Length: 262
Length: 312
Image 1 (cartoon, each protein chain N blue to C red):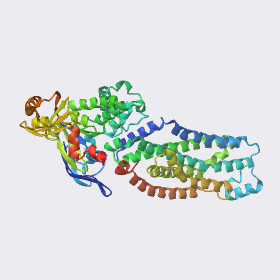
Image 2: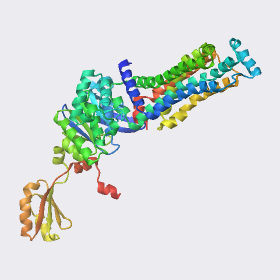
Image 3: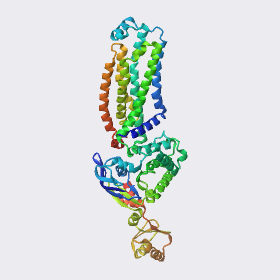
Image 4: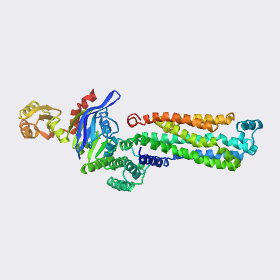
């Protein structure tokens, strides 16, 4: 694989992405909302304390939070719910970019001249995958940094320890990329079968369902997924992504694109 | 420059083309003619290594498409059926992207982008998004893209299909320019007039290679030859007999104040024919040698009679 060719494809993908207003809105608006809204909501609530029995339940699961004031405990519990949202960004942004990119090329018939150039399929796919994956990861990570900083300001400096504990770090920096890769793979597979980016995103959106599930489980307070849980989840998603990648590469075959992609 | 031997490609159970044996010489313009689904695009895709042969082989500039696909791709340029431009990118950005894919350095890219955009009168619009271009301009930009890496062979697949007459004229002029510059060109087209004007030889394809010849050779050897004579009166039996009596006349038919005379050497019988008809009382309005068109040759090679097929 020649990195110069991958880089050329990557730059072209991004040059088109930044010129696509709808796609840019999809990439930029939700991270801002996800960062500001929970913090703003937390800041607006006057009495930041949990019911006593619920607080006891939380402390039973997280003994390291026992020293928190009621306000800090409420803040810690609140911000903990939003970890899953930082997994949504590496899920939906790569999915959006990948589906727009591949289906856009199908509709505009732009792949045939590219495939007639001395470009290997793996280079083309790598360029597209990286171009889709990186914005999602960057958005997730930058938003996380902003969120962690704001959480510390709004809820107190001890909250910084909550949002930088191993569960958060493994969730954002290990599970996030795994989710992003699975999202790109899903985007490639779905896009090879449908001709409308919105339909592809709706079908590919099923990838978000398990993340929503994790969010709901966490919100009940019955289970708080720890770093080991996130790493395990990342391993499973990575394994499934690699299986999907083999399918995706097969669907991205040069001849299949020209003769079966309609 | 291009050679194929028993080239064939199957999709599922159906053969798109089979047993194609073809040679294209350096600097030659070869037209690929055939109806929709005849295998023209499949042939172009095989020779540009977009798809692999099912059987047989093909060599471009001495390189085997099976064993040296990347090297062949580096030596060919292709104008696909649709321009396939990145419409949000500028004309120069489109060309720059393909220049990079072909491994051209920055200075070469800059020089060639300017050269081809100027050649096709697009230099002033170099920073405009390709999506703002007319169909003809897009097609010219796509041709520039096909030439950017200085390929040994250029494949043009239906370059004027779906273009209005003005845009088609612009594109034909561009192709004519390439022809004059000595490029080896393979032109897949439905447009027989375009083929007769631009091509040194034409290859008729319909699932297989039916015939390859120069337009002049085809017109000289195919189609009915003779003389058409328009009269002011309905031809009667005496006029028909007078025409048939002329030496060299193979047959005479009459249609609506018109005599259709068949002759192998129309030029040598025309004067005697006119004299004989005038002597028999004919009032002649017009005499015209019947010329075979590439369209007639096409129908003859393809084994098609449109009037009868339509009636059927």
